[in-house]
Each structure stands twice: as C-alpha cells, then as structure tokens.
Image 1: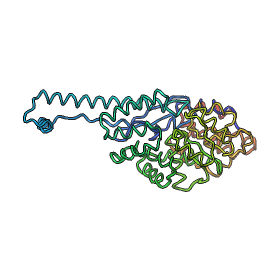
Image 2: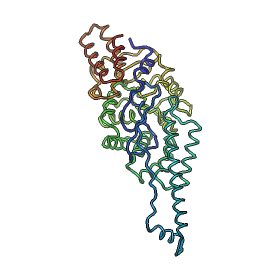
Image 3: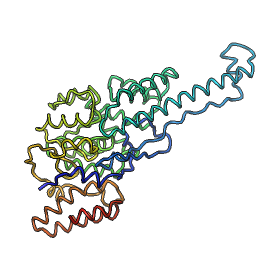
Image 4: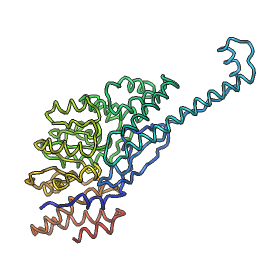
Length: 409
C-alpha cells in the first residue's frame, strides 16, 4: 500500500534542506572565476538539490588604471602632439562611465535571471523578464560586441535556443574555463543528442568538481529508481548532468530515457522529444500546467519524476504519484507494482547516507513506506535495517524530531 498525500508530507520534511554543490542554478549569470556564493531558495519544495542554487560570483569588471603613458596613447589615437590633462581626465571619465554601465547591466541581468530561475510555478521567464533581459543584452552589445559577457549572456537569455550556438562557441573561445560556458555547452550537446560531446563535457565537470561525488552518488540511486524502459524527468542542471554521467560513463540503466523539464524551453528540444514518440504539449510556457499535460499525454511511457521538481508542479497530479525509491512514479491507473523492497534490497547503494549530506532526507519517504511494508509482512529483520537508516538520517538532519515522529506513526 503506497503512501497517499505524500506531497504535503514531503514539503514539511524538506523545506529548507539543501545541497551544497555547484551548478544548481542552471543558466545563472555567474562564472567560476570568482569565489563561490551560495543562494538559498526558500520556496516550498520537496527536493534537496533545487533548494540551494549555487552560483559563482559575477566576473568582476576590471577598473581601467591610467598608466603613466596614457597621455601618449591618447596622443597617438588623436594624432596630436600635445593633449591636455583635461582631455586625459575626460578619457578617464568616459572609460569609468562605460565600466559602470557594463557592471550595472550585468548586475541587473543577474537579478532578473535569478528571479526567473526561482519561480516556483514556471521555468520560462515571464514576458517582462524576457524583455528586460533582451534589452540588457542589447546594451552589452552596444558597449562591446566582442566581449565575453555579451556572448555568454546572449546565449543564456535565449533559453537554450540552439540557433544562438555561435554566441556560445565564441564565449567558449574567449573563456573556456568559465563554468557557465561548460554547463550551457552540455545543455546544447544534450538537446542535440550529441552523446560523445556530452560525455566529454560531463567528465570535465567531474574532474573540476562541478559535479561532486555527493550528487553523483545520489543521482546513481535516483537513476536506479526509475522504472525499467521508463522515462525519468529531471529539473535542474545538477540532477540532469549527474544522472546522465552515471548512465553514459558506466552504462547504468541505459534503457531509461532522461528528459529535462527546463530544456523544453527550446523548440529544437521539443522537436527531438516528439521524434522519440512523446506527445509534447502545445504551450510555449514551461510551467506547472505543462508538466501536468505532459504526464497525462504520455501515460504509456512509465514516467518517473525526480524529487528535485518543486512541489507546486506536483500538486495537481499528487493523487497519481507514488514513491519508488528516489522518484515519484506517475500512475493514473492505480495499478503500479511496488518496487521499493527490491530497490532497497538489491539496487540502491545509499552511499550518500555515509556523509553529512542534506540529500539523505530524500530517502525518508521510501524508508517510511518500507517500514510499514515490512511490519505488515512481519519481517522484523528488514524493519530493523530500515529503522537503522532512518535513525542515521535523523541524527544528521535539522528535522530530527519530525523524522522520529513520522517513524512512530
């Protein structure tokens, strides 16, 4: 017997839990050339990964220093043998003004894109947000059309429009070490089904620690939780890329199709998914209704939803969702076969539980379900194993009291 009303339960458990890992913010406007800055998303969510969206601080725009030979440079450009200090001061003011304008545009872009990413009911930017981003990108182009920040933000503001891939390639030539570039290149490779380029990119992300062992271990268990020959719908960069890495690098669960909710903003991606015999909703917006419609239109695809998907997306279909390991399986027929015991006993590694990881709380729903199942089956040995894991998670969790209370019920 599966748990009912699991969404409200999970919101209570996981509100405020977090994952400290790079890349959770998707198309944020930040690079990895500055110290990391963690932004905690406090929206009601049943997930751990998307509750903390990690961003690197914006590339600092270097202030131009007037060197001793600046007077000579101005002379050379002007063709005059003598230029007054007044002209030099004017040049300094103009340069400072341009830097200030660029910095202001980048700060505004960062704020708008972050606000867009933090919407709890919509992945697509609002019309106003899109208009503002386009205007700011145009401002960057007018200031310096050859600059890295113009090209990377031109692509990011296009919401995975592969027709803008050239902008991303130029940004990669200008700064191949930028984390944003790496993540967006992975998105393009995934959307275009270029698995060789994608795997090479993901290996680089692992080598650089962008995808760390914690999220890789968690997503290995999430991939194992997906139904055989089914479809796993992911939400953010982290859960998508870590799951893909486990699949492509180690050939794990290659029968599972991974779809990213965020990438449905791309018309090219929608076309590719349609060619894989999925029915894609006509709505241009990727929002809560889009996911509801996608699930109802593809009931034959054995859909599993990552726990990283915010609760608002799941409320409308919560009566058709069932905990299966680290995913919600969508089954409007109410005929789903419980796989939790086989996942627990044969497939899941639980490696994350050995660390001080906030991701461990995502195992609680399955473990509570198993505790009830083993008690009904009068299997004290297995129930004892489940109790031990619940206690270990509770011991390291800020929600210790709540988890212990749920364990008793």
